[in-house]
Length: 602
Image (cartoon, rainbow, N blue to C red; front, side, top):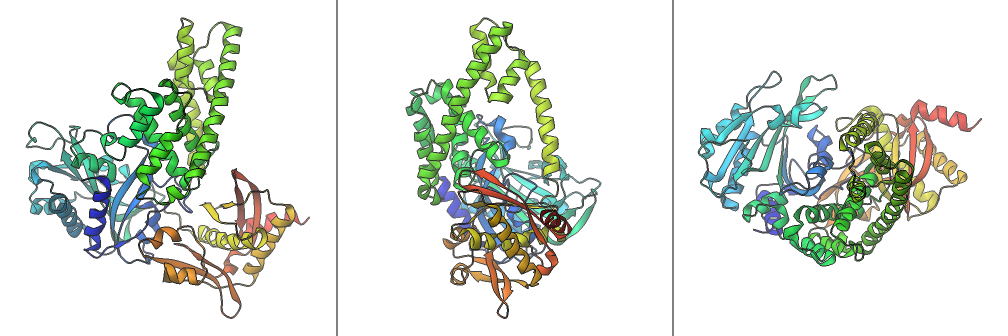
């Protein structure tokens, strides 16, 4: 079964069982400062997992785009990817463990034809926070799984999120494994045997971890499942690597063509290139451009790492343009927007490649200068070249070897680790709040983004469109399409318009509408096109009413305040470039806004 067939079979199976298909959210989380990227299907659904009604009902299914940066260093082996697709089905306070496990078993054995004797299961063993998951264990036994094929594991293995250290909805999970070995299937399941490959995970969200570390029962019990599309496709095709499936072979072939080298002799390099360019294509299609911050920094790192691997394959002439095209060709059937934005994607990546080539030239000059002055380039110097010029360690080592010397990698690693610790510390402070943050303050700021969005359209023009949003309890950050720096007059006018709506104390309400109904009401939003192809329903928030007029109507999941008067005041604190053609605004509400406005008016 190829990837697209698996995708369709999965969606159809759950639609037949009362689930509504919902679109994939963007790789860049909307209004979620806890993570840079959407790493799992549940991220966009947190408000609904905590009890807010979903416009499509209590049973949902989709294929979610995901990106995990923690797997970057593992890319090049048989299974690790940065961008991947996750098949998922959810129950929002509807069915629970019994039905979820039965659905999983039936899909694997009946729909996909997986023999029961090639399956193994793990369940949560229990600890001081929660008991052994007896119900899941018993259900798997009832499905015909032998007791010796069921492992009882702790929080690091069978709890989501792993370890349960983050605030928010979480709970025990049960995971399904498939035997990929050529020899007979072992009678007893050994989770440490890598020939057992995890293909599906059913998470049972029963708890809401508080910021003090305690666990409170969720207002509703939810099911959140995830099946990796690429990994499962490889398993079903009998492939040992995801890179040997039809989603990757055209990309690998393009790399062979442009580098004039063979995959069999350069597997790791070509897999890194294929993964990183593929991920870069998806990021650019979701509005991310290379930069030195946040998502843009990760994109820059991916592109430059891919270029470095191409250089190691002796390709400095053809570049990665044909590889980008191959990535678009393989993904376009699932994401038609890639074809529509092909020129933009090519341009953004080509621009970053050209910038990196200049960086390499500067780095070579800096290397020559360092070596000429001291007669060597050691670990500290190698890190300086890396941190200042983005000069890869591998290239520094290569140049040093040519001079009959070596680089002290331990010193480099120590410097790099110190740099990472500083960055990580800042990141933890920056992204405090997280998935569980639906406080009154964040609701106010979320509502303020709707007012800001409409005000920007009124002042700058209808071309303004939201390109990203990030909200903490202290401030909002709003990215929008506009190709010029805002003037002081424009910023003052935007503030004035938003504050006028706050002073009017306009009601904030929502209705669940079809996409066509939402468009007829001129609602704006980020994801209306993705809903259109499956005919889904959307939640449309309206600010204003028939009596005083409608100021804003926007597709959004929430949460929001009930009246604009709750915001008290609004002030812009910063307006800057985010990337080419994208501007970024930071703003505050309440007392912070009053203080900012008072200072401005002095």
